[in-house]
Amino acid sequence: MSDTYSVLFGDIHNHNALGYGIGSLERSIDIARTHLDFFAFTGHSSWHDMETMEGGREQHWLKGFKRLSDGWSRVQSLIADANRADEFAAFLGFEWHSSFFGDQCVVFPEDNRPLVFPDHIDQLRQFCIAEKALMIPHHLAYPSGRRGVNWDVFHESCTPVVEIYSEHGNSEDDRGAFPFVTHSMGGRQTSNTVRAALAQGLRFGFVASSDSHSGFPGAYGEGVMAALVREHDRASILEAINSRRTYALTGDRIVLDFTVDEAPMGASITADKQIDVSYAVAGRDELDVVEVIQDGAVVHRSHPQSIVPLDTAIANPFQLRLEWGWGPWGDLALERVTDWEFDIRVTNGRLVRWYPCLQSGPFDEERRHRFQPIAEEGLHVTSYTSRRGAFHENSNQSLVLELTGGADTGIELVCERPVAQTTTTTVGELYGGSVNRFVGPFPDEAYQWHRLIPQAASALQDSCVLDLPDGPSSVYLRVRQRNGQMAWASPVFINYDETRLA
Image (tube, rainbow, N blue to C red; front, side, top):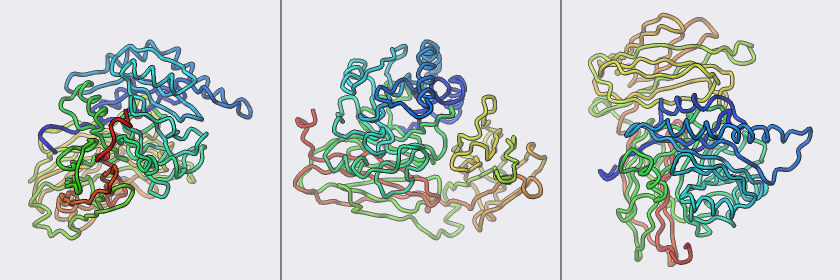
């Protein structure tokens, strides 16, 4: 990453009981602080063209809108108080529904701003322009008229980015991974995808957010965004978003550096006949493929080293993934919540940093995931797992550790809950394969040390030279890891007509 910018991770679209989700706003803020650098709470506010539903089902939405409206003064106060200088940034926002225009998330730059309830997107846009607020369309690829995006009314005046991924699925393409299957608005419509909009010459950057309705910002697998910022404060985060220096992630905190003719992701540049594309990727798992996409076509692919000798794997910092959970599934009628508490202690090595991968289920107002360093040699972890309410039926939580050491580096796990148990695994063992442990007889919970992730298999740098067409062109980066987690860097736009886009 260029010395000019640092990477912050956040979620600017999520919900709780102040709307038609669950959980308190205080809980949402606490969870966001645990594993994010910034977040925006975007409570459900209104749906001007909602139709009457069978059995009065629309009351579910109407009651949620009233809860946000009635609690707005408290929302304003809690968000204003949540900011911590150089540590954590919180933004006030709301979500506006529209069957015809598509849903929009409004994110304010300042505290203590009003709720509005317009019945046309032009009115919402004018409000956002006056407030210098963001207006971000989400779950784009749903069918037109069923709250999918309406590209006909798109304008970048207050919409520098769009939400390419959330718990709804992936809006990049109608054939890509993560299809739209979890809600009632249908599958992906080709004309509403990101690829279709870029082909029309529209200009925007990429973000992802969870859209979690269980008060869990940054939920793993449901979407998170990264911003390339100059400072850790709200003004710098908003400047990065407005400049489209953002990228979208499904869950793992992949670090991307992507430039075209040395201009960063999101930039709009002019060029003659060719452009120089460069990128560096640091994944949290083995990389599968990194792709450069120009005008809808994959024009360059690169792959990491697939076989890494042990001496090479431990010569640089390497990563280990610890996953815990599993346990009895629903058919056994034993969908219990299991509390975990354990220490991870490293001997003959050093813990450099860690990356939490926290899923939103099960819902619990009081329980929290916590990570407390133990000097440089370890980490104290408090967590909980259950198949009850698990996203995509995955009950597990996980943690990626970056370490330095050798084959004899020991990883001791001292478990207090759910059982007292101490186990030791060496880096040499994890180079050869995963190690599975159980906390009791079948069907009790388990934990797994995944196979060692060498830097040569998880990090990649490459470049290519691309020819340009006669007209405008857009180029972006797509990353896929072996575990299926993905990232999309905002496009760089070449030779766009600024007067036409104004």
